[in-house]
Image 1 (cartoon, rainbow, N blue to C red):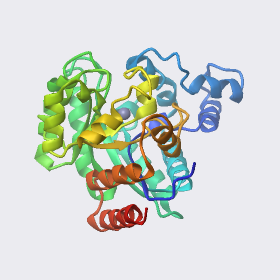
Image 2 (cartoon, protein in one colour):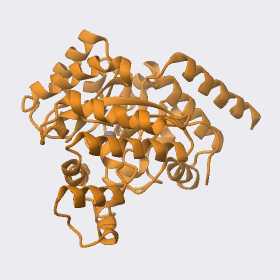
Image 3 (cartoon, protein in one colour):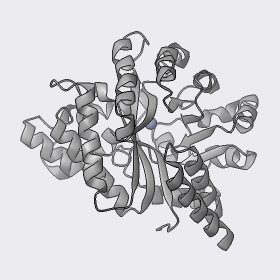
Image 4 (cartoon, protein in one colour):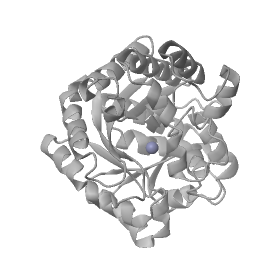
Length: 339
Ligand SMILES: [Zn+2]
């Protein structure tokens, strides 16, 4: 179905949203070996199949996209194409995220990678009304000290580009290899510059990771659905007005929830938690936001009004300019009243 109210995606990874034909094309032009003989079988390879065992297996699917995205031109192209895709899907606003430190293998600096992505975003936005913010991800590869220097540099890069389209920082990557709490240094650095933040937590790791993330002063949690295992934490999320960026299909594919029907999204919404619906990885998961809304209505018990309400939560939590935010929220409220 096509949903005609203003739609917002707060949780969308650039490298998980590259079109298979673009990946194929980049591999040909860069002379990179592909795990398939033709575009059709490559398309099958890149789209996550249901046998993805867990979130870390899922993340290994990013190895190839990352290999193809080591030049400024490639980063600009996929960013431009993603923004055009979002505009075509009728989104009002989206926050795209990527980790600049993963794009330095061919000599780019984090500044170069960020500038290339911002160029693509501007080009993609040129003929559309879609609002876009860019989040820079610090990475967890395991032990938190492994890439400490790169993570600190990511935060400093975010500060340098904050008036040019970067709206905040994130912590992403492998979960479960060390406590989220060990990454406090990333957010102490972000505090120095007053940067907005969100943190991946409560997906493959349980409620404690969400508590750790909240100790960094974040008002948003990437995923966070596992908070439902802990009633005291749910109460805290409600009291503190924390927004969860939930990505239902990603959770099912990573098997951090057993099924759409058993997913706690609706229970959290009914309890009063500010939950939102997002795509995580549009191409790797082979979905768009409308698909996720269909699932919400058909399998998770939501109404169209609930979807509008969750978009109001998204707008309120988004790192966007106040004028744009107010316009989106009043349009959503008008549609809510009209129903
Ligand atoms: Zn994510």
